[in-house]
Image 1 (cartoon, rainbow, N blue to C red):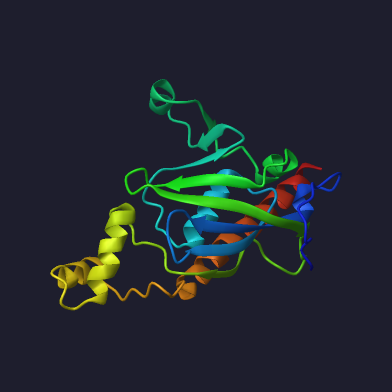
Image 2 (image 1 turned 135 degrees about the vertical axis):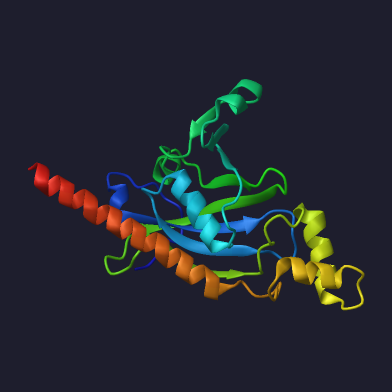
Length: 217
């Protein structure tokens, strides 16, 4: 399968037969922390959230939102809507629908306390490989921040402290994190199993859908 070098709309082809190559990049951080993955255009924004969580990886402890086309997509919450702007359901909006509208970039925020902001870019679209399972991880660079580290300032402190045995918080933060942390390592040994779990879940869902369709005939 070759991905198209330029973005184009899907035209009359079914989204079920198409995938998007996406770039996930953490905002406001250098050297860049990024991931590249392939996802079906049928993916809902809630499912895209699951892909991002698996790809960084994060642990899905907190709320999230997408911003695209001037709208907020998340899990609807009447309290949020009454205090802020209207929320559209991330469970029903599909990536392919936005793509067909010419939208190739989304803003994604995870954890409104630490405020991890990301830019999600649809780099290209292509026919799905019948032999492949989606979503699938392609490549990436840099280790994502630990959960609840305290946003960008907390992540800076964390990296400084664990890199310097003489830092006054070195022992405390190493104990808090509880395992080695290499900022240059993308943690593919964690990412791949998580992405494979999502791909298996999708395959089972498709199989169940096809079975229910055949029984209804």
